[in-house]
Amino acid sequence: MKALLPVLAAATLTLSTGLSQAAEGKDVYNQACAMCHVPGLANAPKFGDKDAWGPRVKTGREALLTAVLKGKGAMPAKGGNPKLSDEDVGAALDFMLAAVK
Image (cartoon, rainbow, N blue to C red; front, side, top):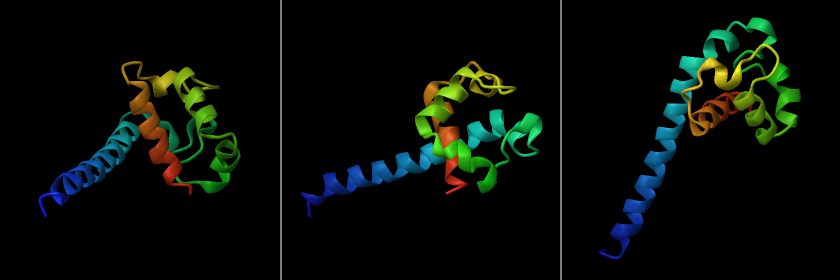
C-alpha cells in the first residue's frame, strides 16, 4: 500500500491540474473572448458553432494559436488583453476547441 501512495498522489495531482487548466481556460474565455465569440461580432466564429469552426480547426491548433497570439483580422492579439500569458491564451483556445469536437 505504501508503494501505491506516491502513484495515487501523482495521479490526483495530474487530474486536478487538468481540471484546473480547463477551469482557467473557461475563465480566460469568459474574460477575453466571449464578448466577440458569443454574438459573433466582426465574423468571429460563435462558441460551439461546429460549421463556423470547421475550416479553422482544419488548419490545426498551432496555426490557430499563432493567430490568437498575434491577432488576425478584427481580432486583436491575445483577444485584446496583452497581459495574458501564452499559456492562458492556449487554455482559452483549448476550451473553445473542446466545444466543437
